[in-house]
Image 1 (cartoon, rainbow, N blue to C red):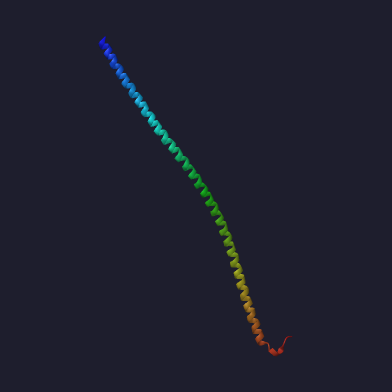
Image 2 (spheres, rainbow, N blue to C red):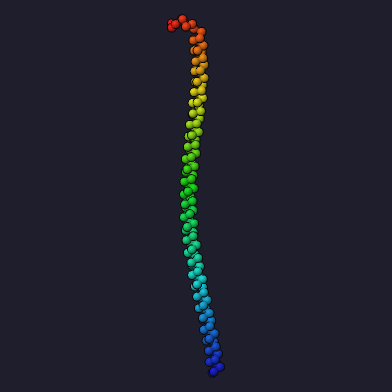
Length: 120
């Protein structure tokens, strides 16, 4: 009976030790779970911030694209204005050359007409 009681006590002590080990393992897992949940929360926060930065970058890219489109439009308008001005300068140079030729002709005519002839 004593031997049986001793074996029962030893079995109980072993079971108690196993129970304590299981409790310690559960506590360790809970701590790990807490750490993982903290890491998850941090990762989710970083993900949210990265999403906001991505949205901001998208907005900046869209604004830059709009600015580039507007700049291209202004460039085309400036090029068209330059072409119009070049045409106008060419026409004015042609007109100047014609007027210079007319002035030379008028000067040549005034040299050949005697001053005593007077107006007719």
